[in-house]
Image 1 (cartoon, rainbow, N blue to C red):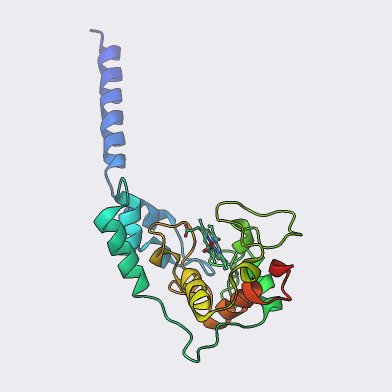
Image 2 (cartoon, rainbow, N blue to C red):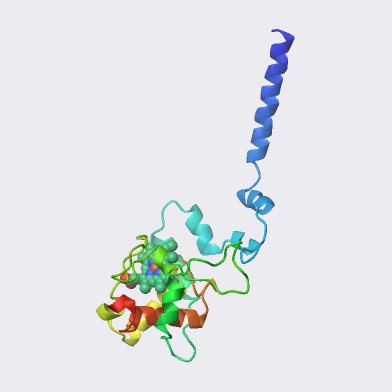
Length: 199
Ligand code: HEC
């Protein structure tokens, strides 16, 4: 073997060793080394709770694991202390249609939006909406406003994983994405007979 070939082989070997070494650190360390806290996006976003860990590692989510996730998330739900579930639907409409929040470019002094329209149809007249979640059109008109329906809907918005383990729906109350008053306003959007949802 010529000297040139041996050197080339050596270079390839050390390159592959370097690549193995690069692949070694845990993914969280890699993310921590490159993510910077800025605006509303703090490094807390890299800390997974037990539910997120289970949802990122489990091959399937059923049986005991599903029951554990539901129980853990149900325990986080806080209902409004004064028993008022409904706020102002006009404000709720703005929250549902606002996609900003928790991103580095968002002003930390400003509240986050709910981004509901990105996954749900909300109103008949809506032109653009996502379909990851079911349509919420006529939500209040179809279900009424019994205590049970109000409580269920509050809890679903507060922590969707209390009902659907590993749901893609953000846990708005539990993760402090929306305030109690913002959830009331979004609730009014779903239930008020005058809101665009129920036309
Ligand atoms: C990233 C997608 C996503 C976003 C954003 C989202 N949802 Fe959902 N939502 C879902 C999915 C998916 C479901 C179906 C059940 C599940 O997976 O939890 C759902 C279910 C629901 C339900 C239960 C519907 C039923 O038939 O019982 C309600 C109510 C709801 N969402 C309200 C909202 C509101 C209000 C917002 C905004 C504050 C919102 N969602 C934002 C994905 C989303």
